[in-house]
Length: 352
Image (cartoon, rainbow, N blue to C red):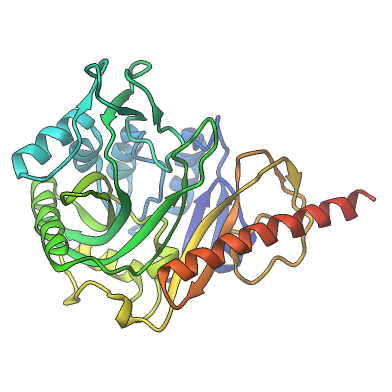
């Protein structure tokens, strides 16, 4: 495949791997300028060229609707997003399908119920914080579930699901964003009963919503079982963990599933791989300019030299391997610390 990439960052490795990489103007935060996005799509997504969406579009279903209308969208359209990302609709759907899911409230939660405020269609955990009532339109509160978070990578073909692997997840908290996404490691083992229950639930959800392609389910393992928190209906962060043998190339599986074909694969187990992998987002602890050259070979999403990065912004993705997912997670944490020390030294040297 020879991808043309439209994104906000223009990282060095993205540009090296892509047939062509086009930066899109950024609005506030990490949002595309829609006028620039569609101008570039009109230039580059010509003919029958497929368009695959990454993260961030769930909070803008109108953009997804227009992309699906004007171009060959290989993935989930606005109808599926309406089922999966409208919190009250999704809560009612999971109840009808017999899938455990926390109660959501569009107004203040009852006294004594611990809840988290979330943005409709939000991603990456930036928007999640403890609150008893949503701040306004476009926000809701969800009952807090105590337990260990994990994620299921799966495929859908609009009729049934196919589980691919499970991973650990963790947060990289700040005072303003205590549930900000930190990273993932896998594969991890899930007991047979839990795996079967999740597989059945995903089959029901795919059939009810028409979900296609590569997706992930965020879950919590509780003292009494498990609970679904969210469905991410597109390729996501665990590509960095699982896009390796023995699994086939995940983007190839995504295209096949969107055409209705699912692979004959059992969920990946720790015993199936020689090494576990971890991928974590490194967020800037303080403002700096990228002056470290070269970056370590275990860094992906490499910012160009001279890029100004503000406190809390994502700098890059840090990768690691280990005998187990826990060991890979420990190594990735060590590497993040080493990287920040090296970046700080390079910045001081450049200022001398």
